[in-house]
Image (tube, rainbow, N blue to C red; front, side, top):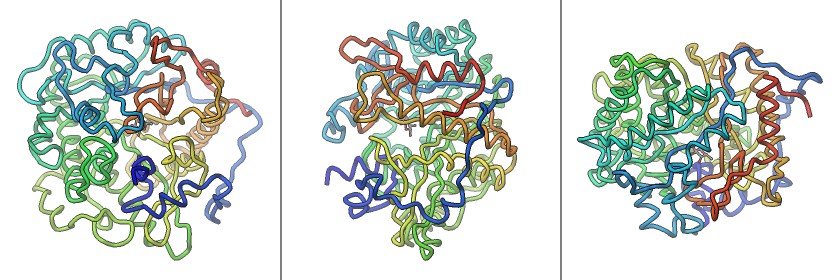
Length: 490
Ligand code: FCB
């Protein structure tokens, strides 16, 4: 049963997906039958390179817990991920933790040199709340602020624009002890934390991002139990959704009241969903609500979809009345405070069967929650353009882990993956999508949450014994794309 965990890394099999997990998701490419919906979406890239607009931001991304290490240095407090790894070791594929990770806390200067050698215009990283405010409330930690100041200055010296995520899943442990995201006060604690950050960094002209993937934090952390804090309580997951969105809205308001430079928005992981059967349309609609609209609608329309929560196939099985009771007057107004940028993490699509389960319809990677289908990126971006008010979009994450058969730093699959996704991004721009940048996940190999160090997502390899970074072939290929500001056909 331990295996169900790895399959549900991004909730791609929905609730209680034991059948799907044991069967469909383990099936190989041969088991994927493209549905008719896919057939009509075929598109051939042009024979000449596809160019990107001037100023398009090419970047690479990381997050604090996954690379920094130094988990208890310079006043950093414990987060839910420290606790999860230290106390629930069996929940991590290799029983590891982010205690040391890629030791970026000590190696950030050379990591910035690596970034500069890639030629990127932007770098997306996250600030660790427990480094800046160790207990999640009260006093700030100057050494934590100094670390990020050094990092930001180092980026600016190298001509790289920061893209700063304020929260990438590392909730201070004392706040979890007090109830965590399922309680409303955590949103207020978050507002205090961002007040510290904006007070210290209001002059930093960056793309600021509020919370990374509130969906993954809510579902994996509080519904499937595969991520910290490891709970399996759908009502708490639903409450987590609302309180994170509230935290997002409060942050957008604080951003404006501090007069911070740059722009701000959320990072949402979104995924086109496809019925695998003509009779599964309703189920797919429910899953679309759970995966996409539950986050897009409140932020961009100021309302919650009515089909996300309930006991129908594909829904988040929480009590809709209980969820409604959490929403105070004015919350949706706060949540829909105008944003300047929408960050989209794209890792693929999902099929939905008659039971409302998410099932495999496209090839996966060693991260078997991924379903690789580049045209889905185009579909997703054009759908956002069509269904929501016009907002600049940045792809804040996109990538794949090393192939199991890969040897060393030769990673042709990653190159193919990135090429096909860049082409779909260019296609979306041609279709009028206000897409302004693309960050590859990840700059370097890192601690991949419940998969520990067993998955390597970096453009550069990390030897964890020596902490040596070695650019993979995709690194050089990406550098040439950035230089040309164009992606050539294969
Ligand atoms: C995303 C997470 C990121 C990393 C990639 C592979 O969902 O935001 O931290 O784990 O998946």
